Image 1 (cartoon, rainbow, N blue to C red):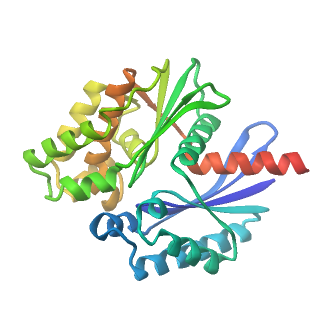
Image 2 (image 1 turned 180 degrees about the vertical axis):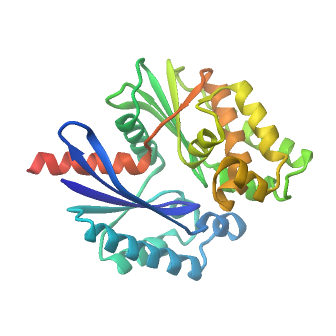
Length: 294
């Protein structure tokens, strides 16, 4: 049983093809990513340019075709913050549907948070409850808290790594004033967040995975402060080499780390790095649906 998801986010468009295995459970088969930069348009002018919409639609068409060649029985396209934030977000949905011939699922803030929670716990073992899952995207940040089976507390903050970078961290490397401004922006964004305190917390998304490659397997206050200082002191090129990421991820990594530091402060527990997120959540739900009708 094989399924696939095309995830259209603020920074990138990603494909995940997965299947179930009787012994291993959820098994990823193929992953692909293409940079779209939709969030840059949203932050700079409030709407998506025709060029970015066309490029995203063409990328989605190619990834759907790849998923079909790999034998995916069901394919779902989801769109996260770009359609919610852009004045013309519906134009993106329409273009994606016309290019792929598939119905697109635009995710609400709560829907994105819930799928991130499901995906993180489908791929990462936790030994305590309640558990929090934090997903720092390019345009927004989702927090979900609950038991292993279902989240009971969901929130979305309209601030992500790309958005914070575009607003505050414009120099290469960023200045001390820019870093201070970014920290203040993040603190204000999360100032009214009063979640139930979890026993364990997981971080998912590109920032979390990049920080793991950088060497942070346990994301606590001390480690994040040191990482932000070191990463922000490097040029984008040097940062990419040090963290083993591409240039675009390197550009937004200090901002993403600042947001994670604010999340860690609010949740009051260290953050582990999850192996799954929204895409794994979508595939898990698709596989469950396929199994129910088999």
